[in-house]
Length: 540
Picture 1 (cartoon, rainbow, N blue to C red):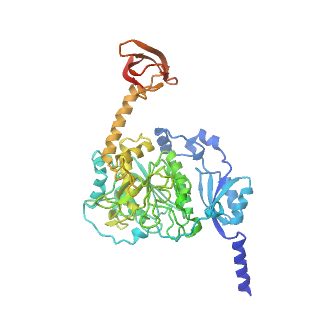
Picture 2: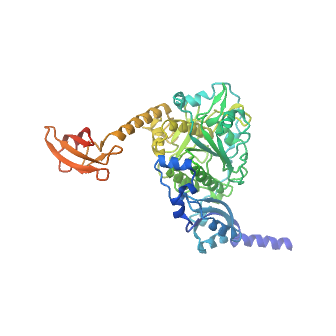
Picture 3: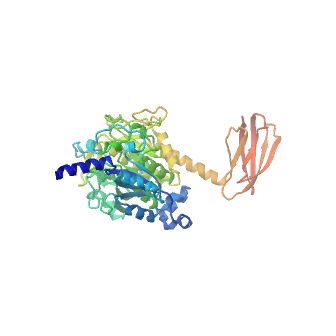
């Protein structure tokens, strides 16, 4: 009889909303926003402030931490457990009964809730079977390679040229977010990082501790493709960079709380001044099939991961992420690789051919994904025991690119993140004819480096010279001013040498109406403080 009663209670629990659900809880407001923005050093490190200033990234309300009073109120709610929080979204990730979470909306401090079971928010999604995202990599037999086996993956993307220019990631900060980093501090492949004090910090967002051994050795191996050195055997793509190691993946289970932990880690990375983030993780299916992401969800804007990734892009970082190993399964890239703010990476073999396991594009809204490719089939890595071996998966093509990005960015650190990402895309061999499997193709970091240097020269010239744009000009001509000059005089002459226009201009009034001029060629002369620049202008 007792067993029957317990069974009836269990059935009623499910029917009445007592079953456990996961959700994002969005708060109404934050406390102390004005004070924090007036003194940003109270919420961001100086390294972060300097990086934002260099890239003209605004410091705004999103940088202000979640109001801890709201977190305390949430923790005090009956049956509600808080697992993560996001200052960028002003939200917390919680677990509780459906009714308990729904009741939060009636409180004064909660604005809305979003269930991870999409059937509780929108139309129900079809169930799927959970697969271990590391199954492909973990089931492969690793082979010890001698010196030279890291050469192919390095030379394929021409990052060796950038290294030869003495740009090896020195001064750049990389955050690696993964499942576990066992033996990293004793692994001889990272002794140069330890000796130089370039491991800047660690944190396990799942267990809320600084130890990041985690579950499995996946993180240690992906890290090796960026920062490891084994003399005469292996060199990563940014061996002189500095690192934060964040464990955001909980191997024994698969739950969207991992996306929330990942966003938390991004926020911490931004506050610490991180330049580049590598994520060899992807999210599409979960233990609870009701939480799965459908293809329609992977539009770069919907999932927790993609939303966090786009906010991180807004904050000036470059996020490099594995596209996924579902080429023979689900098919397309997972979250957060679907986000437009992410440089998502697919895998090729040692000959540069598409690896069939690599997840494809396009996204549901038609964007090219993956962005670029690197060797992911039999890629050289260093094991947690310090041995040079091989593993396969986009998990390894991603850090190869992430380290290359850091080394390239070191050559011109003032380059905005979006511009840097586009230069890398344009350097790839399929840029003019991208494919679903390869995206824009294999990038050429030598070409990208040369493009950055041209930009550097152009920017230097703009600092000391005037410039006219667009040219050819339509109805309005604009003038950019060099530094330290605020006013000037513009004169325009036709091909006969007759002056057809003279106008005072300034930094704030730098547009000139030329719609009345006839089409043809003109000579523009801009004078200020004894300096004169002349330009040939074509009027359309």
